[in-house]
Amino acid sequence: MQLASLRKRLAGALDGHSEAIEQHIAQVTAAKRFAGIERAFSTALHSQFNDIECRFEVPLKELGLKNFFPGRNSGRVDCYLPGTATALEYKAVRLPRAKSGPAYDTIQLISDHKRLLYSKTLKQGFLVIFLYGDIVAMARSAGSLYRNFHNQMFVDCSEPSLDRMLFRGPEAKELGWSQPWHKPSPPKWIAAVKRGNVGAVAISVFDE
Image (cartoon, rainbow, N blue to C red):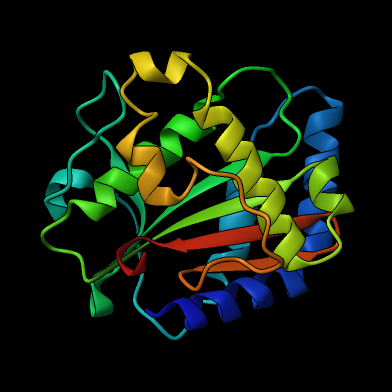
């Protein structure tokens, strides 16, 4: 799968499901929970995959991949497309954060990036970040949405505690998160989509 195709599918997913996703987010956050937010987004995206073969929650070992998250050895790829040897890793990120400090999702995204980048079997890999929260709602365009997301990652990667987990240096630099982003549009290897109060960013790992 190419980035342009994934962007089109993300747009279709949010066009058809953004209101339902927003309702789910409102319900769970009102109950001070975050259960099912990522699944609400990914289910919407998978509704756009009717024309391709998909496998979900595929064990890393089956694809020859490693888990780079600190303290973990096993794991699963969120979505695998056998026809094009494409893997997708999902993460739902709230902007602004519910808690301060370098959040779990930043470290997870960096480790997922390494997982896909160092693969010897994949032809394509994407990080798909589903975004929600007040900062997402205030973004005026997909470009400003990406800029808000990128700059939050930059702030996270500047935190000294990430040094101790070996995730601040080259790993952040590969993703571009070692510097802030000021341009109106994302880099060519990144697609951003915004609909209402929710959005998505897709990062093409092998095209950076």
